[in-house]
Image (cartoon, rainbow, N blue to C red):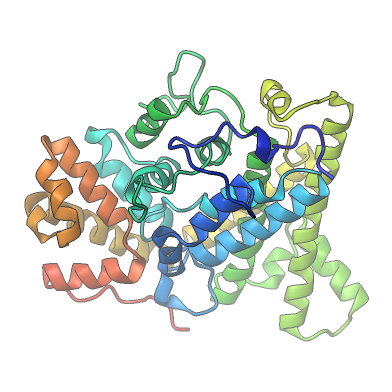
Length: 397
């Protein structure tokens, strides 16, 4: 049973291009299915999360991360009486716009695109699902519902103030501005509860799996985690219940408890905030003008300690920094090469290049191409086109 403040598919604001209703799927189920079958979603399997895609078979990729986020989102949405299909669709789409090499690739493109309207992976996800997926006869993109697009655009909260100025202080990314101009996403407000669930599910998933991947990589040990909040008590409980447990089982048992602490905290906070709010519709959630699905203040502070630990021990580990420098060079050199010689782009991109009437338009086309690359393809093309040795992995797995 859905709660009154859940997003109801029959009350969807529709799609940019009108379509007949499916006879056996709700609009949000249809959105989810289109995302799963998209080319951009398939490419996530070879895009990095923290470690470069070829560095080990057990590290998370953007695809496995997105699947984990979707699982958490469905669990939370179901427990809270929300629309699980919408939460899942937003969760599956939330990382579609990430370029190769994770946040390192995004940082490089942000710098390169600063003169041309900027780059942001959330905005690029919108560009993918509204323009760049070109498989349907009647429209470009996936023609997703307004609610799914809204969730992709602002699952982390409002993007602009009421005057339309970006809250980041910079200009609104062009990809987001274009989408919003075509299908007003009310960027100054909060999104649905389902979108907020997808956002917190992302936090839960990466907090959990970055600990797991960091341990597997050897960048830190279980003893290090014993000194931290949340993880320390989790390992202590496992040691009390299962003394002498073999190391891999001990690790799994402790980290699944960390996972459970985060999920249960979100459900408790949401229940406390939603219960007395007297909400009668999904719009009432938006009208609250505050984040309703969140961690408690206490857990948020404890997670911040863990994130600081991961920043220093994992994201800025010397081996990771070395690889970041190498792959930044890959992105920057590919971008410069295609700007100078756009004829090197594949044939299916030629029409877009020929239609470009300015350096900015060309830069955006090249960004679309480069950001869509997987880690392995970017490394291969860099080696082929620039006659460079392939980027070597710094890991021995």
